[in-house]
Image (cartoon, rainbow, N blue to C red):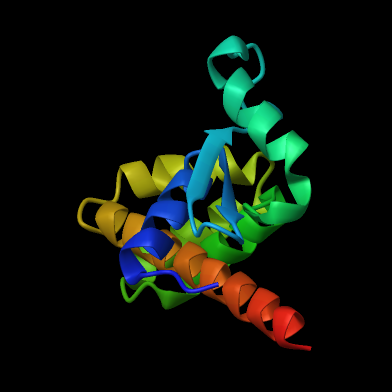
Length: 144
């Protein structure tokens, strides 16, 4: 698999949005479809053709893995440890140690000024790295 940085960023962005991303190993085409596990109640009919194409040619496609909640929690923890504002760092760590850590973390980030954009950038870089790792793993597997 050979993907451009732009394609990798697009895959990461789609995974972050709750989509499923597939790479056609024969054509190099990327297909993105709604992740019905995350978008419960969504209109499935709109995606029917893409789902059928992927299901009928499953061996031709590599699916990129999105983030599970424990992965997102690790990224939030890493970001909290990375923050240079001592007070915000303490609030973020506290938020992660309370009940409903995702909601609490989001509230702190949404009210943190410039750190909000830093969080989005940090998370996206982590997802991009995860996509690159999957590409490397698939390429190693393919070469063996």
